[in-house]
Each structure stands twice: as C-alpha cells, then as structure tokens.
Length: 407
Ligand SMILES: *Cc1c(COP(=O)(O)O)cnc(C)c1O
Image 1 (cartoon, rainbow, N blue to C red):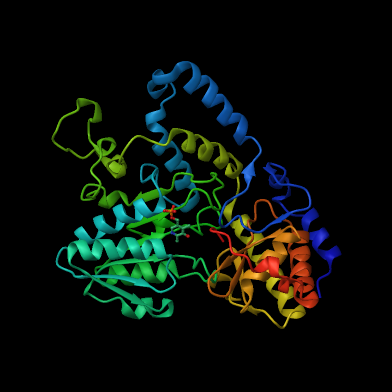
Image 2 (cartoon, rainbow, N blue to C red):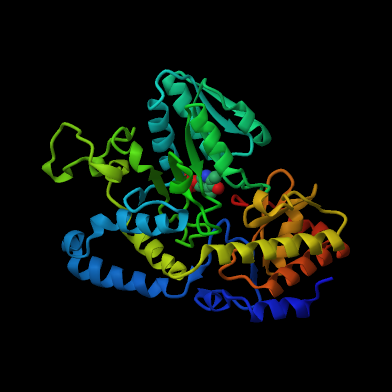
C-alpha cells in the first residue's frame, strides 16, 4: 500500500515539479477544479498589465497593426494546435466553445446534404446538445442521441455528422477517438470532436487521426482564465468547402473593403466571426507559455498516476462512495468522479477543508487532476479529506446543503 512518504518521494522525482512553481496556488489549498477553471500562471497578470497600459493605454488603435492584434486568433490557435496535434493554419482561438460547436457542426452537416441525421450521446455536455438541437431544427434534420457505449454501432450511412465530446464531463470516461473517427469515415460521415476536457491534459492527434472538425475550451486545462477564448479546428482538406454559418466581417476575405457582399477568407480565417477578444487572447497566449517544451506524454503519465492513486485510496478507505471513472487508463481523462446520493454537501464540506472539487448533478463529486500543478501528496491529502468528511459525517451540517447559482 502506498504511503504519504511514497507520495513525497514521487514528487521529488516528478519531471513536472518545477512547472508547479509557475502557478499562483494559495497555500494550504488543494485545487481539484483545474478541469473547470485552470489555475493562474504567475506571469499572466504582468503580461496583461503591459498590454493594457502600453498597447491599449498608449498605442491604442495603432495596436491593431503595430502589435498585430488582428493575428492573435491565428497565433494563439497555432500554439493550441501544437498541443492537439493540428497543423499550423488549422486552428483559431476565438468565441466560445458553444459558438464554435455551432460553426463546426453546421458546416459539417452542409458537407453531407443528402443525409438527415446528427448523432451524439447522452454523456455529451448540454451546450453541445442544445446547439445540435438548434441546427437540427433549423435544417430539418433528426438529432439522434444514444448511450455513450452505443456510439460506434450507431454510425451508419444515414448519419451526416457525429458530434461527441472526447471526455465525459461527469464521469471522466473517454471515448476512443481513433475508433469513432475511423468508423465515421468508413460510413462517409463527418466527425466533430469537443476537446474541452482533453486539450492540455493529454496528447491529442487531430491530424494523424484524420479528424474533420474539433472545438475546445481555453479556460480548463489550458489555463487561459475565466471566459478565455475557445478554439475551432478545421482540417485543411475541408477549409475550401467550410461554410461558416456566422458570416461576420472578420471571416471576410477583405474586412476593411467594407463591401456589402460576403466573400469568405481563405483558410482557417473563414472560421472567424467578429473583432477578436484581445485581452482574453493575450491572457491565453501568456498562459500557454507554461506548455513550452513540455512533453504531453509525460503530462499524461503523471495524470494517470495521480488519478489511479486517488481511485485506489478512495476505494480502499471509503465504502460509501462509488468510483464512476473507468479504471482502464485509455478509457479515462484527467479527472476522477465519485458517486454519492449526497455528493453536493460532501463537496461543500471538502471545500470548507480547502479541498476544492465540484458537484455535477445529480450525484457526482468531481475532482480534476491538472498534472501541471498538482503533487502526489495533494492526491493523498485530498483522499484523506474525503475519508474524514465521510467518517465524521460533517457533510450533514445544514450549511453545506445551500446551493449557489454556479456549482
Ligand atoms: C466546458 C465545456 C463547454 C463550455 O462551452 P462554452 O460555450 O465555452 O461555455 C462546452 N463543451 C464541453 C464539452 C465542455 O466541457
């Protein structure tokens, strides 16, 4: 059985140990919510301050050209591309994941005009499903929602688009991206992957797997800050046919010609919509510095070791909670989810002990293990806190039952 001393020893030889020092992490707190809002890299505020004071404050409108603000979606997009296995020129950082899902899925269904079905699964994040519902209703298509384990067998030549999220936000269960992508292509369908819980957590191979479209989040494992721009990937082979349903001026071939006729830009630029979120992009760009020179296989190995350890400890110590996350390494992301009828007050009692996870309705206590800044001792201490909160019954205190707006 592992001991806390073993965890300390693992931390001393952790190849990512010094990356932790690059993050602002309040003393005494164990932050297991990096899958929801990544921690702040310490150098980001200074970079933001400089841009605000020098570019916005002094150079003002000249900054669009002098500081190349208009290129930011592409520069930041290419940096994200390096983390998800995408070629330069195939990703922009822009908008929200919901908006990018709309653009990607609507463009995807237009590539298969003779087919009538959009396929997704019940584990998908609600916003993705809402967006698909909107597209299906507007275009007169059927939205077919199957169980996550049935996605592969549901792919046939009636399907226009398969749109799924690689890692289930609730259970942390991970789809087989290679198998589903291959099955889509075999059946002549287009695949759209949501990488919200993948990008920055483990290697993704968009180009190698031949993925058609993908979207993802900037504020989770990429640590871009609250409301950070999201991203969209359009495989180079689809860029000429890609039809962005939101035909805004920044997706125009020549926005500053102010022509009233829409002519799409070449390449990934046609996935753009409006004025870039400069400050958000600057924060995300700076945050991505922590990934420079990192080997994502090393990041993945540490993530698997931490999630394994947490599951082992909780399973060994607490009978009351069920592990909802798959034990097979290739079947999970970078989080562990525990099921309990009273998961909500249990999570609140843990937060009161400075072990910050979150609750997902109806019965999931969710713990994200961001490998860049967590230590093995944090895993140990978090598992001890879970055990103590359950054994003491302290979660039953009435104050832990009060639900805020954001959980
Ligand atoms: C977090 C998350 C989102 C968030 O979408 P926004 O539009 O950026 O708020 C979308 N999809 C999935 C799968 C997510 O986990």
